Amino acid sequence: MPRILIAECKQEVSSFNPVPSRYEDFRVVRGAALLDHHRGGGEEVSGALSIFDADRSVQLVPTFGASSNTSGGVLAADSFERLSRDFLGSLADVGPVDAAYFSMHGAMQAENEDDPEGFLLQEARRLLGEKLPFVVSLDLHGVLTDRMLEHSDAVVAYHTYPHVDFFQTGARAASLLMKILTRGVRPVTARVKIPALVRGDELITESGAIRECIQLAQQIEASDAGLSAGVMWGNPFTDVPELRTNSFVVMDGDETAAREHAVELANRFWRHHEKMQVPLTSLIDAARLASEVQTGTVVMMDAADATSSGASGDSNAIVRELRRHNYHGRVLAPIVDPAAVRQAFAAGIGATIRTTVGGAFDPARFQPLPIEAQVRLLSDGKFRSESFGWPWDSGPTAVLQADNITLVVGTRPVSLFDRSWFYAHGQDPRRFDVVVVKSPHCEPHMFANWCAKLINVDAPGSTSANLRSLGHTQCARPIFPLDSAIDFHAVAQIFHR
Ligand SMILES: [Zn+2]
Image (cartoon, rainbow, N blue to C red):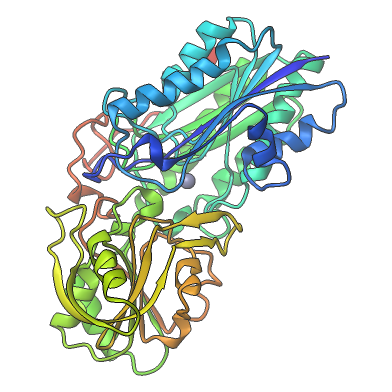
């Protein structure tokens, strides 16, 4: 009866968000509650459980699960100390186990640790032993470090963007772990470092240039000796020494095949990398273009303040520009500003307040914008996500009406890659002339399929697709697009235990 340990630690940060994230920003579950939380759910651990539960001989050893409620800034040092103490402490006294599955994101950074996942795996290895098989599932936006590869037997990464395969990725990781336990497969990993930071529509796995890479990875993974394969292009905003794109292939014992496949994946990716940027429209041009549209909704994508990528959510740049432009259409915009929300709650529904919105967290980029607004709705900010049904919480939240501009104003950032925050606060994006969407992409049916015009706006922000504007100082150089004329020769490095 194999005893399989399960642990989880997931967070994605933007190093350019000035607000540190904290332990309190995580959903934490311990022991058996980890299983209760995920059974019947849609995340990676849920997918892994679907495999483990199907094998009656498996005995599960749930330990600790932490997942940040939304992305944010670099994790504060004392918060990471507490998190790693809790995580590793839960592994220390589980008794003998035969294998371990770790659900991680990969794009964490703490003030005192540039590779938190690598650290946790290294320490888990020290606690649990050199021989124990470890399989780790990761987001393809994770930063795949040497230490993560050295201390795991295999990694498994998402194959979709926008992500829809959380469950399947966990199931793939669990199946791989079972193959190691029951069939004695011997994973060997080849990894190729690709000096590129990429964004944009070509990374949409259904339709973009990345599709042929992902399809190849899936073919490799499905082949006789294939165990796992993928391309992880990392979160370009997690500015750590090992930030870059990686291809990786895990084969059963066949180092030569792993090497060849990883090189082929990397070369395929490199052929397209120059396309993997976002053509952006300046704020001034975006406001002008919006004014020219007579009917239908203009969607203004503000990926620079994408809370799901780690931004602070307090940008008012597009609203400010539309006001400066005397734009008269109906505008719907999300923003985080705790002081404005407090003022709205104090005044009550129907009252008119004079306040400011914007710049609450990132004052170097955004200056407070004075508004006079009517309080139209107040809520506790708890709602379910349109995409996955997950519970999200923006804290106390107000809908403010400032002339033609409707603002959904929250106390803390929530993910904005779908419409749920608008819907939860009575706002249907189709009823507006301009909608500000703080996400790099959304599922097409949410906006792109029906809007009159979609504009990728070059606004300031800590997750700007204009990567050169951010000021990376940590990632290895040269790297595209921060540097020019990069020579690339795919070289595979081998990892096995
Ligand atoms: Zn991701």
